[in-house]
Image 1 (cartoon, helix red, strand yellow):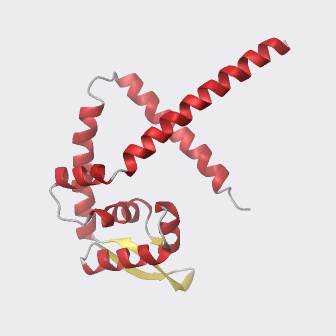
Image 2 (image 1 turned 180 degrees about the vertical axis):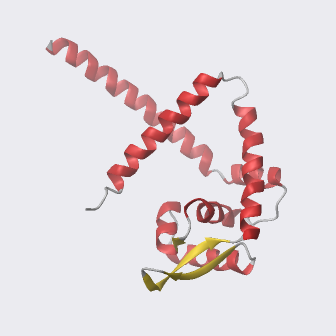
Length: 163
């Protein structure tokens, strides 16, 4: 039985190493500025590439404070604050006092910002169609289900529920 456990542990180590390599590749591709630039081009919008991640995350996660947004994007709070101010000046987001703590301002997507992120989503769909063109539906569904499960498990470890 102990020999079987050792074989299983070795298999798991190799699989985790392979998974880690895939994640490094995925994050590397997703963090390249060329990807955001291509998506912006495909969407047919005029937006500084640096403003792209905060706009999309405000739409997905908002209302959201700048500190949380900076943490999720991995940028400095002061940099993100300037970028959110720029998005606000463009009419893509608005800022308002947070209901629980009126000293904190949270960012919310505007109608114009939602229209822009809808164009980005449509472009992402077109571009993903090219990536997944040769995948069968079951493999794609499995990928989505397992990635969501993996992301939820990671988030639960990083941000455990309070209570």
